Length: 515
Image (cartoon, rainbow, N blue to C red; front, side, top):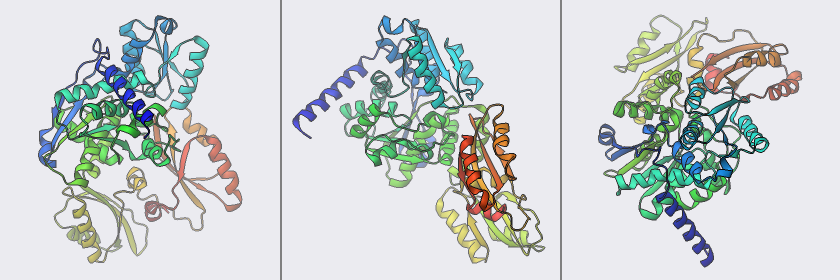
């Protein structure tokens, strides 16, 4: 680094530090608690703390950045109001901040946004415009509205004033726990990680800063690999608060300089952390809110260090109630307290009893089977474990020693999301050219009709399974009879449909139970 570059970086650091220290946000923002998680501390042999941004009036840290941004605007900037696109916490934070400052706020939200979030924005005084079926469509509309109506556009993360506002979380944290060894910060667009890391690295340079991403929305990891922000082809929707396809330009530059490491976690690991937070605090964190604690637990398992002071940021608690059934289903998989297996057993009397005897004193949590008239049967079985990967490996070894053919589906998303609910739907028709695809359907009236109009009239649908978990998109598994000569036409219609999809014909769970 040249002398001029070093000077520029030092100037940047000092500017952010000054602005974070002087951020005028506490007219509406509250200083949130740092909660010591005693039960989890004992389990992980470290001192675990949770920074409770669920305590903000909008139950999310987003209020900090939104209020700080609006407080810097001139009267001319505000005369026609402010506007933003958001399907969640930024929308609520901006609406409340604008209400407090007497500024008119317009929030453009996708039509698929759950009613609870739309109602909250209106309750905080924001005008809601429902446009499109995705965030990208809402964002495009917000940009156009801003131009046409002379409104000031407030970006949810890629804005210096927003980043400064989010950095105040770090200011409070160091006052509450000045000796933190590692701080785990969730990453979506990067505003919280950027603001906190630039502050922490100046006042506590020995504190390690780790960003945590959802494995299926890892835009920061992709940007670090490419050396610049890049678009993900698609993002997972469970942790919708961090479902961002592209990290911010400003946020990425700061994260590159001040963040030490990035960890990715699975949906099951997030569900396990939601459960841990509830058991310790009786707060139901949203998936993005529990992300950092999932990263913390993964870090502890990987490093096996002890007696450290570890802090996770609970970034939000705006959980859609209907998502809880999914969390309940998946948390024990995340805790490694359940294995999901496919086991081939002889189709004869006494087979199930002998299988249970091989399992021993472990509890069977699920057993799915249907008679198909063949010499052997595939059973889909869940088995309770004590909480370690080693125990699962021991179980697999015991079953193999008893001459059972076993496939471990504990990490197979298709098996856990769809196939376990469809055992018995095996296709008995010979020589059918069946292709299997998983889809994300927008949750709005007409989505299924659009699908059937585009595909059902032209191609025979051989399988269909749908599950909704209270999110803006439902998960769909569908099968089609596709002859070779029609393959080009089939994919042409599939792409024109506009729904995200992935082929799953070669997935082993499908091959075992449904093919």
